[in-house]
Image 1 (cartoon, helix red, strand yellow):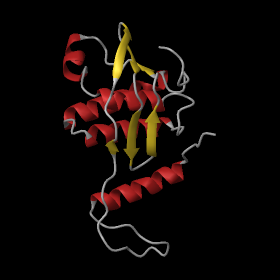
Image 2 (cartoon, rainbow, N blue to C red; image 1 turned 120 degrees about the horizontal axis):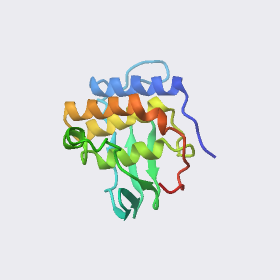
Image 3 (cartoon, rainbow, N blue to C red; image 1 turned 135 degrees about the horizontal axis):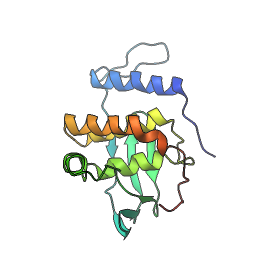
Image 4 (tube, helix red, strand yellow; image 1 turned 90 degrees about the vertical axis):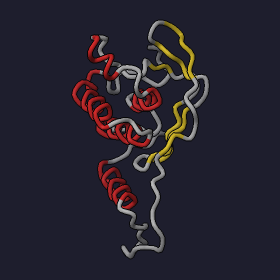
Length: 167
């Protein structure tokens, strides 16, 4: 059974994320703030472990786990195939943005598959890509250039494949 994240749940996640960034604690059911400060939980829980299967295609040798403030736990399964970030091979673009965000790109590629768990809307997958790059300390210029690249061009790949489909 797969769960689809609705826009209202996504917006609720933004509120929780904003509260954590601002250092305010969680609120209880009545809307009263609980004691203590919130902590961001977004982080990769495992290392990226891949092997090259052909020119430009890689396969996970172990599960990649990411805990997101927005979508919860995302597990990219063993055997998932990725091309990492699909940066145009033009010299300037590849020099600036190629080979920069492998873990984040695997997570994003997985969430673009039609049967990922959780199933993510395109803007959710793109925002999670940005969240993961921020969490990993990618520079502002790289982060936002890659984010806008997937926002503008990602429609060509979104939900076109299933998780177990080869590249």
